[in-house]
Every structure is written in C-alpha cells, then in structure tokens.
Figure 1 (cartoon, rainbow, N blue to C red):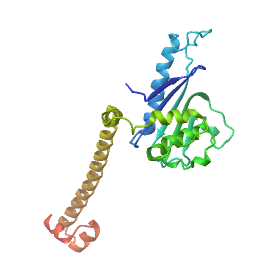
Figure 2 (cartoon, rainbow, N blue to C red; figure 1 turned 30 degrees about the vertical axis):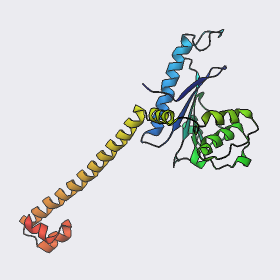
Figure 3 (spheres, helix red, strand yellow; figure 1 turned 90 degrees about the vertical axis):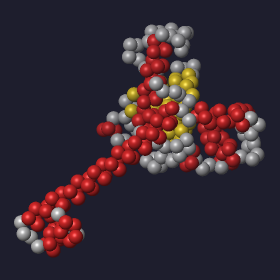
Length: 242
C-alpha cells in the first residue's frame, strides 16, 4: 500500500500524483515508478467502474490505461540531473540521441522538480509553474508577501502561512509528514549500509586469511622469512607466529 500526498483528476481524464520529498533515500527512482504504477492500476480500476467520469460516452478498452503524471517536488538535489526540472517518458533505446523522438507510450509521465536548483528571482518569473516553484521554495523565508499578478498565488500564500497557526497544528502536520514509508526508507538505507560494510569487512578478512594460508605454506616449505614477507605482504612477526 502507498499513500499519495496529492491525488488529483482533471476533466480530460488525466490523473496526477504530486509528492513532496524532503530528503533523498536509496531506491528513490524505484519509489517514483512504484507510485506511478500503483496510481495507474488504481485509476484504471476506477475508470472501468465508471467512477471518475460518469458522463463518458464510450466503453473503456480492456487494456486502456489513463494518462498518469507523477510530479515529485524535491527539497534536495539529484546528482544525476542537470536542470531543476527533468521529465521522464517511455522511449525506444534506438531513439537515444534523436531530439525529435516521440514516446512509445505517452500515458505514463514523470516530472522531477529540484527546488535547490531553482534560482530564479521574483522579477525573473514568467510562467505560472515558475511562480508556484518560487512560492514553494522561498515562502519559508519570505518576510514580505510577494505581489503576484495572479491573485491565485496570493490566496495560496495566505493558505500556506503558518505563522498565525497554533504550534499544536504545526507539530501535527510535521508529525504526519513522517510517514511509515519514510521511516522504512531510512531503516532500509541503514540496513544496506550495514550490509555493504559487512561485505567489505568480509572481503578484507578473506584476503587476509588467504595471505596467511599462503605464508604458512611457504614457511612449511622452508622459504626464508624475508621472501615470505615480500610475497604475502604480512609482517615478520605475523609470519613467525603462523
């Protein structure tokens, strides 16, 4: 089971999953794909049952899936991306390098936004998307409400303000954000880190045991300590103790 931050539907039957991600964790991209897959299946079931659009005048194809857009707004940088906005789609490998390539299937889309890389000033904002990103990134530090041309951003600013809210509400919101999935991701990272360290330690111990076995064998064959030291990399004291 997954819990979506925001699940939204439009009149033209597009489905959106909007996720706010505070920190990176292992398998982050896998998580984005999983959420999209879960949302696709869930929305497909809703469409088949005629729940999302009761005015639809044609039957749903057996394998027809809805258009799903997954938007991940990240408060961290993804080292593998260059710009603050990156889109994923389903393309043929043979189309790599072709700037005019079209997706094999345009039903599943991903948009990753990295707020730290969004550096436009208020005066440089041109699109509605840029205004939203500016609001999300800068509002926590804004001392004066920006004068947006569109009143929708002023309304959003007022709704997002927490200074006037009680500390109990703020605490509850923050607590709710620390979901079970987030905790599991942190534990999973710690587990993987421990496994990697154990593997490294195991390899090192295995290599040391091999050197000792080799040195012991050479010693039994009557080789000089100096020659064994040079061949095995072990110290004279350790070779003598074998």
